[in-house]
Amino acid sequence: MKALSRRQWQFVALALLVFAALKVALITWYLQHRQPAAPAVTSVSCSTLQQGCTLPDGSVLRFADAPRQRSPFTLTLSKQGSEAPTAEFSMQDMDMGFNRYRFVDGGDHWQARVTLPACVSGSPDWLLDLHQGDHTYRIAFRAG
Image: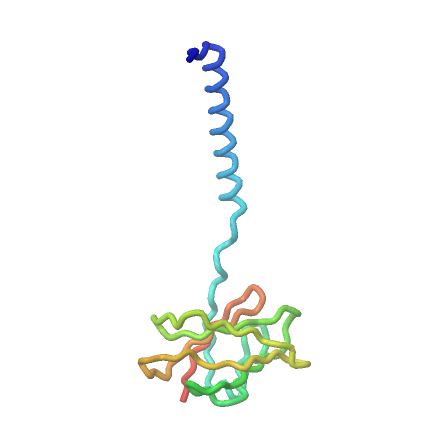
């Protein structure tokens, strides 16, 4: 086997330097263009969701039926924008798994038929995370 000449070693060194520079440039580009962090969650206080809760963007969220565990109920949301909102349910310090519901067009409002996830603790205290456009609203409520 023939040993590499000095010119060949210089070519290999140059190729490695170009590769390293390309790698640094790609990592820098990725770090500058990666996805932004998740939007901040805005807590919203509501006395009764059956009467309606006005969100900071002016839309109104209502529970058409009283929320009960193991029974489906309907959420309605006055229309804001053209993108369908979504809702997720959890409990304080307790992940309830993936349970995202997409609202559907109900004419002048959005609506979603939802069922609370199963919870072995039996706690009636729930959190609803409503994702609407670039905003996420967290609403605490009690289920029967």
